[in-house]
Amino acid sequence: MRTLHHVVITPHRVVVDEEQMTVTSSGKMMLKEIYQSNIGNYPKFYKMDMLCKLGFVASELLLQKEGNRNIGAKGVVDEENQRDDRAVILLNSSSSICDDRAYQATIDNLDDYFPSPMVFVYTLANIVTGEIALRNRYYGETNFYVLPQKDEKVMTQIVEDSFQDEHTTSAICGWLNCDDEDHFEADLYLVEK
Amino acid sequence: MIKVIADNITSPLGMTSSENYLKVKDGLSCLQSYEGVMDIPTPFTASLFTEEQWDALMQYGDYTRFESCLIHSIREALEGSDVDVSSPRVIFIISTTKGNVELLDSRSHRLKNRTTDEAVRLGNAALMIARYFGNPNIPVTVSNACISGLAAQLTAKRMLESGRYDYAIVAGADIQSRFIISGFQSFKALSPKVCRPFDIERCGLNLGEAAACMVFGRMTEQDTDDWVAVRGAVRNDANHISSPSRTAEGAYRAIAYAMADGDAEQLAVVNAHGTSTLYNDEMESVAIARSGLEHTPVNSLKGYYGHTMGAAGLLETILTMKSIDDHIILGTRGFQELGVSRSIRVIGEHIPTDKRGFLKLLSGFGGSNAAMLYQKGGRR
Image (cartoon, each protein chain N blue to C red):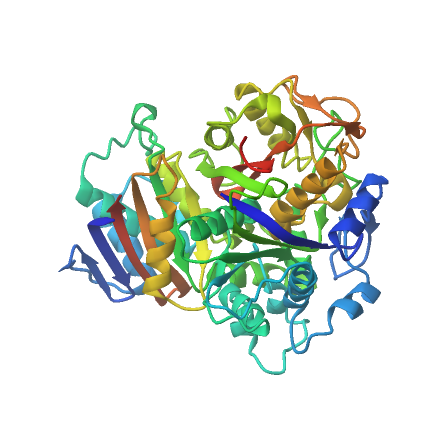
């Protein structure tokens, strides 16, 4: 397994291929800042929960390093550039806890009971893998794993094992954890077999 | 390839795989209408454990409902095997979508030895379970929405085939709560009545509670009468995060991978996800037809159990194995008249079979789809 690119995002710091990016804000606002300054033209970003925003921004920074994006008019990769040889394999320890709490707040009080499908859908940790697949038209494997805590050895084993799928030749993979708007970590890699 | 060594289904219908199979064979279900429970304003139909069943399941110490039913299911499965789960050569893989999420509710009870914040973390719950059994490894939780149960088996297959471990304990569960039920209601995905997979009158899914466990080991040359997980894959629709692809892109690709060396003639049945929502069943009919499996019998077990989420991929796989062992293809409870666009062969009543293979399908939110081919005695 060979690492092609590496992105680290924490609430105060963004590092792309070991080079620190200049940002002026922090936490949730910082993700919006990166989206606006380096990505843009994908309004769906604003609807995403924190975990998806984090995963989306981190994956975009990885893929910008790779180049050749072929983003079409609808903000997603053109059909002719679809692929199923790239997997999206993410892990964390907090699953979708940030959005779980947001959803619980909409139903906790019976006098103020407004369950929302837009909030509920993000109470699944793997939605972020789907968001990345959708943006890049990846028809390959998407999978989400949860560990008690960050563990490099277990992560590496799971990603290495994912290459047993005969179609998979590369993967966006790594740690994507979000406790709340000011506590998160993306440690994502673009790797090839 | 990996083989099934032991299994268990713990559900409102029964506490062992055989008990569950016999009840299903008799056409029974615990799906019923609930009104005014869990402080949920709208009535719903579901298959839930009774208070008496919970009393029987909550006997292992300071564990949650989710953890208790998994511990029970794993214990029951292990009774049928001689696997030493305290060995570092054994890995625990837990399949769940929401684990202990019910504890987030301000009305829920507090645990004695853990904070709610710890317990709602899926990895923490998985660790409690692995440690209960004295397993020293870090357990892996697969949380890939409704396909978790198959994705977990695929993970087990890889971990055993890479030689990292000798045995995998794969166990899945989800507990129904205000959180999950209100969410599905907000999506307008729930049927007020008992669900009717693939039927023209279908109007949504039912939720269900269950835990299920499969113990896997590597297959050896001598194994001619074991159930083997031959080949499987997870594929994404790359289309929408909460509705399936019209062309069934992900499911079609997952099936194509699972069936790459397979022969449709050897399939007793395609055990579909068949949730009974308009979109899921329609999408699966497209995937099945597009894969050239229009003439293969198709069934769904959701009419017996509802959608058991993290347990579904395990529970439905175990039942399909038991039924083929019994030379039967289980009928799709609730199905009468085909209500999908492709003329696939959905089985209403049980029918006999002498075939020894089947294909299991699951699809879920996040555009995820999974397929796995199983064969009794492996590939021949």
